[in-house]
Length: 586
Image 1 (cartoon, rainbow, N blue to C red):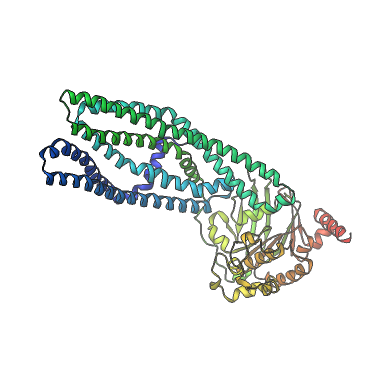
Image 2 (cartoon, helix red, strand yellow; image 1 turned 45 degrees about the vertical axis):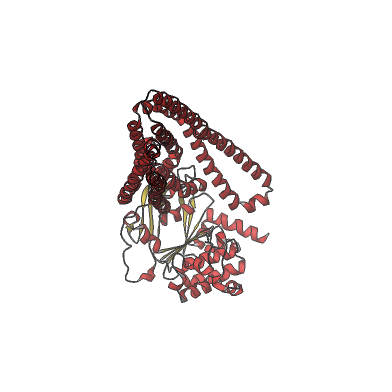
């Protein structure tokens, strides 16, 4: 829901409360600058009406010097005030971007997955700048100096000639009336532009991420057409917005300026003829009138500028309203012997993703501490959902999950994740060195010799030895400099480096060649002792040595037992096993 103008002001004011001292300093600077600005035209009047007639060249020189120095001093004060204002706008932008980024890292996955990457990118970058730099730095904070400048010059106009001042201010209703008439159209166009920027950012992210698929499927022309369509829409909206702003800023402004000059000169000449106004006063008035009109136009444009950024403020406000992961909870109970692993219990747990995807329904099982358990089943049966729930990425809709006898809801998510190592099906790597990816989120220097140990365990040593810079080799964005198998082994090493009590492997060997898989399985045999290991597998060889296998289908447990026992039952596990054996024999 779009924010009202008062709500937009409230959000902006909340951001600048902590900068009260800087704002007060800015007000003092602009007050002094306004006084100097108001005095400057009076020197014009004095020069024409009095100093020139006195033929006192010293007085004339002094007045001219004042006419030069006063604007110079006023400009200097205005520059100082503008610098203070820029500091506030920049600080607010930085703070909002940091807050938005930190909030994104904590938002519940269910809510975060409703948005595409382009929309989130806009919120993390452009929206913060729109609020800090445009709304606050360029519009709200300048309101004070603009109003002071306007009031000072209007007062000076009335002191100089109240009749001429009233005649000049007749243009004000025209100015604000025109701005009010086009305000809704300006808001509509700028909301459209913001939406197009979001969709454009998302298209770029999507294209870069899927570049290999685009080329593989000869999709270049399709993507070019999509981008051209977006580009045309954006250009049309941008041109419409520019045309509307151009009308307000240039056409209307020029007309009103000429109108005011005509009124001032015509009525001023009439007043001079009637001996009610001096020539010097008219000259001074010709300085005040454009200033007042300019200030009024700026205030009118401020109203429109705030309407422009309201879409960005609304998006940012919506983002901060997204619920975050819980931060409360206790640590896991301490065990006398940490190397016993972790007991895992699912007690009648149900969960659905809420976007048409299957989850799990009334799922119950118990995994003993130190046990090696395989989870198998058809795609979409709920296997990966079990891991998502164990990692605390989602909360169950009903039922409870217990770790070492304590319900997960009572435990800190940070404490849970510190005890779990996970190897996902799709490995994500940062554009950093191999060692930084292995030790994430810690620094490599903090772990030292442990890195070498897990490199050996994950069968990475031959690969590392072949690299020109060894562990310091950069892996490229998302690890694209590595093969699928190499990325998977890095993920395995990264999980083992945490020395977890619970190790979760989701198709952890799917990208490995048979020889590496056999060697890695042998390493796991030694490494799995002292921890609980749960493996999701489609290849039955991956879980052939498991203590127990849980078969999951349609969100529930349909079989459970040792590999040998399940083969003897000739159920779903037996069907999977036989199908794979038949495939191998072919």
